[in-house]
Image (cartoon, rainbow, N blue to C red; front, top):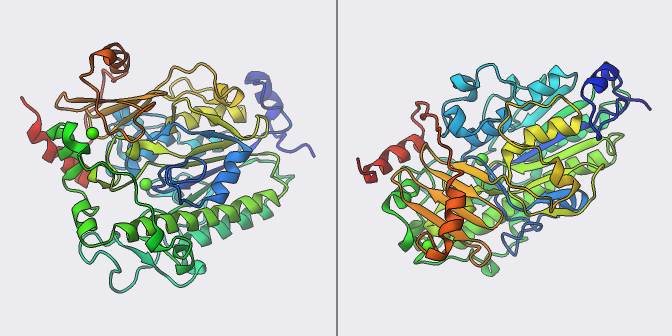
Length: 476
Ligand SMILES: [Ca+2]
Ligand SMILES: [Ca+2]
């Protein structure tokens, strides 16, 4: 019954916290869902989203309903979360380079590496990091095929990037990598003995709803295409944006143009495909949660679920990621730890960057003052606690968003700015940067723009190319 006692008595005297007893170090189950925006039942981003398992997880823990990524792209978002450093500290702003190639990150532990150093067994399957997960976990079960099988000819978008397609495919759940990842995790959860001397840190990274937005037909049947609700879009939305802001989100992207989606009659189908992909990923999550519930670890495992960034489906005439508007940065973030009340919702701004220091505190590991996020434990204790840390997101040096409890401030490289009041403008349609009555509030947000921003590390990703293309709108 006294599990995980190994070497802990001495640790506990050094790093005693109120949450961890020396005889009961918690396991950690870190679950990632790739490219999932706020289209979940509990976040309410789309009225038709079906996510019973994400919602049941939220019911058991704390839902951070105002959580944001630090970068609206996989690689920099995950590198930031896993090293506790902002993109503007590491210089990793885009899909390249890899986090191991950033001089500012040299020698830093990622989250699983830190846990391994403190006696945890670390294991994972699927996508926790952007690539090369096997480098960071002691045991890696594999990607199981990653983004999954593709048909011989594309289903819905005949041109463009090979991954950019959507539709009902393949035949069965068993052919989907996420199903295999869930089965792998379920098997591990049921076979790791309760009396194991080492607690575990397990990563489970699902690939859907990332493109290709494929899932077996039964998931599409949940969302009949003739009854699909399209996202609310204001066609004049971009009139109050700078040329730079529009250009940054228009250029060199692999996602389809909104005008093509509409003219090809594909908007409903693409929304249906995203909803179906989410429902399928949620089903796979349920396999893992059921296995945990039926395992000896159910009362001693912290569960964290996150997505790495948001996703546009036509809002602001954009598709996919790479924007620092609400659609690009808002993500699900749920923390379940039985030492805190269940069913809590915190609207305070949270960052994925906060996960690292939060986990250290919850597991009773030494605090790391070099981490740039803030432990969310005060908000787990009291979701309405005073909290003055806004969420900072960026897309390239000089393009920074500051999200507070009710507002979003954006400053771009060309000096143009935006300000949105979420109390009456949840879609960020009205840029009120020039409204005099907001001047003081705007200034209070502007001070959070980092004064030091690392140069962009070189690479040839489409993010690098978009940033370069937009620079023609920057006056010397
Ligand atoms: Ca992603
Ligand atoms: Ca607007």
